[in-house]
Length: 433
Image (cartoon, rainbow, N blue to C red):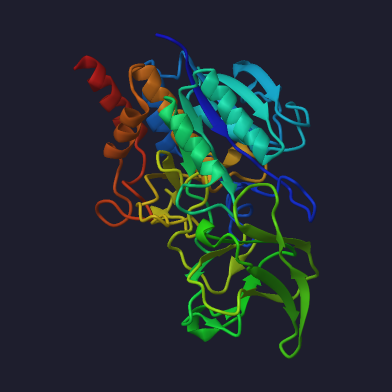
């Protein structure tokens, strides 16, 4: 059995007005959601521990599988949870791989360690969109078997045609299983078209005729506005206003993002506590352009859950994972939904995002926790059956799921919740047959 490699891409970015890595962000809930206070006390549940313990006892531990994790926060390579499994580290761009100041990379590795305890860990740090793509290409060239990417790229097309999604598709076509998050934008995403019915005086109207979309949450505001490539030469902008209920004042106006070839603009601003709203403006005449407005930091007053999946989860051949709260047996309210803009289901499977909350000091909840859960499960499948192709691996994960939403396939939960024991048994049966 040749060595298997699983890549977990957990990309985080702290954005500034002039920062070059504002496209990348941890795929956890925005700051107004129950991320820390609720999750910090949650550890591995008996159910999760029992499921994986049964597999580990049976000798399915991720042996001969190497797991790569790419994260701009770095890793605590001396952490007891991962130190014995760290095989190789590499930095793409600036910054040291070994960084104890941030918990995200270490927590991601800890989830993999708990699901696939005999897997070897390969750790990489990135600092930009380009370095992310370099990391994917590097591991594809190294004959990596599974790539898992719990990272959100905002301002990208929703149909899988952007550079981030294309990178995932190319990896799959090269023989790697690519696993990505759906994202956490169901409560902070709006999409619509720039038509005569939806535009008044160059200003977009949201629901109920409102041209103001209030934002709720903390004081560090990030907003992305994007539109389809067919209207790339047209100009659209989003403006941020502060209001006291009577008067309003312009605080910030979006600027084009120059870090890719996608038509988009962004606002990144530190503001004082208070009431704020967003306004979207465009050409004098309706164009029919499809607009997407998202905030990775704030919930929006007017939202559309449809089409809220983010890249690389929009990739046409990725396994896209939604966040599922197994304690109450429900999809997380913030978990992004399909369909994609090109009318694919969008979400393939969901996975628990609170089983391993204790992996990080402040809790570990959201897609960043759900995706490595699936990545570890994929490592176990490849340990059980080394002959699986990317398509076969996806098929086994999907057909062995448990329904947690409406019966059958749906845009929120996909095929259902991943069941590690069922999936591994199905992989073994393919070998036995």
